[in-house]
Amino acid sequence: MSTQTATAGKLHSILEWVNKEGEARASDRLRVKMMPELLGDNIHFSRIDASTCCSPETLTKFRQAAEEIVGKRCPV
Amino acid sequence: MTITIPFELDRAHRRVLIGGEPMLFHCHHYNTFLQRSIQDASYIESRPYLIGAAAEVAYAQLVRLFQSEGADDVNRRNELASELYRWAGFGTVDLSAIGESGGRVESKSSHYARAWSEKFGSSDEPVCLFPSGWIAGAAAAIHGKPLGSYSVQHTSCAAQPGKDTCLFEVQAGEANYDVFESVGAGEVGEHEQRPRPENNIDEEGIYEALTAMEIAGDKDGIIPAFGVYLTRHYANYYNRISFETLRAMEAAFGPDGYDATRPLFVEAGHVCAFNTFGGIMTSPEWNALIRPTCKTDADWVHGMVACVNTLGWGRWNVEELSPTEAVFSIQDDYESVGYRAMYGTPERPISFLAEGAAAGIMNLVYRGEVMSSPEFTPEYYDHLFRQTDVFRAEPAGQSVAMGDKATTIRVTRG
Image (cartoon, rainbow over all chains, first blue to last red):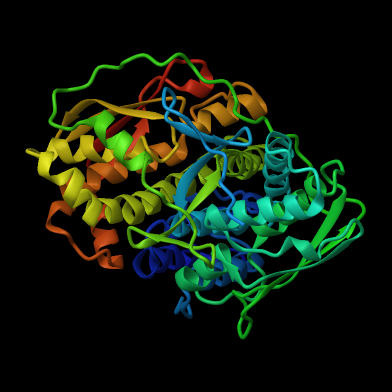
């Protein structure tokens, strides 16, 4: 299993967590924060779903950004 | 010494000019939300224009004011500039510490630091970027130098843990921020009456009554009103920082940059409507002046729009209105006027604040039953703006920025 495949669905799960736990438009903040990394992985934010894979570096940054926005530890 | 701020009420275009700069009301929720949204794009170097835009407006305004008021000596200029800053609700600042070569400026009271702390909690980094630029621009104007003649370092901020004062080190020399030339008042259109459904609101009477109210900073330079801290801020500051961000995002990511930025700027409008409009519609002033004339829910919308016309945002109107839909039109909306003056004609409408604010009015009246004086809690915010059947706004075909006579916004439910 490649490192990209190992991340399958993680972005989606984190995004769902942000939508549930964050304030209104929290996911839009996440989108803005992560634009360069997602572009680098050829991922369009609005098309993130349960099958979306990314690099481990992007996943780490995505999780960090999500935690910063929500103000809690992300369980994903 | 009593200093009166020279204040030009431009009734036809529903705005206020001071020293040639259009100034308007916005609350601390909007100010901090907008700044945070811009700084969320940390890969965009926004700090130089967040500071530079403030230097731009302060310099342009003060140079004109000093001239019109005959303020020829440094002491008189310091007094006038400090008083303007306090009056506008930005806090207090002692500019007398700045000599020709610079100096250290203390601010014991700062709108931005207070606002950030109350809204988001303390900050690891100094947050008073507007004050930083304003002080640098003021220093140049006071000492008769060109804009960009002073650098500024914001070395300590009351929003940081354990701090209660903001400090700014000002030094003569090359600017460490972007230097822009202010576009001043911009170009406005000829006022003409737009269609309006029959209603019971005395728009002109409300305009005269509310613009006659003295809304100014207290001794600490803070304007607590309608449950928020208001500022009489600079249209050209908001426009510069918003559109520099938008253009940088578009340059970096193409249309995706626009699509990513727009929702946050519209959300800033929701935040503004929820807090400031909600505060106005539940205020003693509303209850005394406007509520007695409200016979229908639609009157609440028209009444709030009449209030918006006193904020300096241009001339707002509701052209079509039902419990499920509305079309707002705005002549000389400040976002469009500023964009055209700064950058020319955009490819798409750019009146984001107006879109969010228009949707906010409809949500407050038709979903939020603001007439029952609800508590303005996070849960109430989610109810108004986060459910699937909330009112949302979109451009309705006309944009002052794109050359039309009015900006139109359609607000629909669901």
